[in-house]
Amino acid sequence: MKRNKRAEHNSRPTGRPLKTVKSSLSGKIGQPAGTLYHTGRQKTESPVITVFGYDENRFFYRDVKTLHECEQFKEQFKVLWVNIDGLHEVQIIEEAGQLFGIHPLTLEDIPHTVQRPKIEEFDGYLFLVLKALELDAASGDVAEEQISMVIGSNFVLSFQEKPGDMFDATRDRIRNEGTAVRRKGADYLAYTLIDAVVDHYFTILEHFESRIEELDTNLLEAEGHDMFQSMYSLKKDLIHLRKSIWPLREIINSLSREQYSTLDGASIHPFFRDVYDNIILIIESVESYRDIVIGMHDTWLAVVNNRMNEIMKVLTIIATVFMPLSFIAGVYGMNFHYMPELEWHWGYFSVLGGMAVIFAGMMRYFHTKRWF
Image (cartoon, rainbow, N blue to C red; front, side):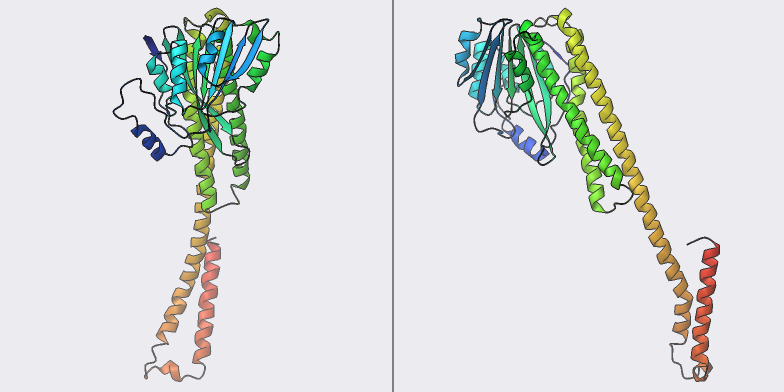
């Protein structure tokens, strides 16, 4: 039975159009609570289940086809870590609920990939939802993935939308004898997984810093729609990044200070406080980048407006100069029969000379006023 709920925050995923989110959620309308329904895109062909069991002296690893194969390992090791890549086959999540005693409301949230980041405590376990971000090296786009974790006293279940290398460093530590993760419990394993998610945010920050530097280099020279689109896209991505990271502030702060039945507070709190410090640093960096982009946008608009003013000034001077010249040409272009100047032998040359004098006088006046 659920006892309390902490640190819930609204967050729409990055890179996922609102229309797609609405169409995914429409399938849940009218369904009773606890109904498992996968929302979002299917990101892997078939789910992959990996099992790690270990203690200080022993280590076990296996790929399994069904979660029922894990039942024999539940009591054999100090810590059991089950990782599931792919959430579209909800029967696998149901099997996890039956094997580890997970509440139906928790199971409902796991395949709901537009879930907001949060932490909840149930009898016997903690449930966390995080937003992991990865950089696509080929396209340069930032991809978002929802990661759900169920943390028990001697087990950790992690649910990912697709396979990846985010947790490979943790797997290597488990394989190596004598590491801290082998000596400690499930709460420390959960810390290492959360820390891996947070560490990937620094990679994303480096990507945004490079984009900002590139825009800043071309800020005063570039103009037109492309520069505006680049700044708008960067600003939008930073807002999405902030929405993914900001909820972690309260979640990690809760893990670093509050007492949970499945966590050894005295030993694990210092590690989560270190993650909390990283979260604060990331949030401050995102806010700083956002302010820089807003400032760059204002500067770019000022440059564009200044260039527009220069163009309008030149065009205005040209139009002003030709106004009296056009008036003179218009007067003598009427071709009335009784116009004395039309019969004058030097009339044409005198009019042209008068026009030249007017033009020179106006240009001198504009230059004296420093209008060009």
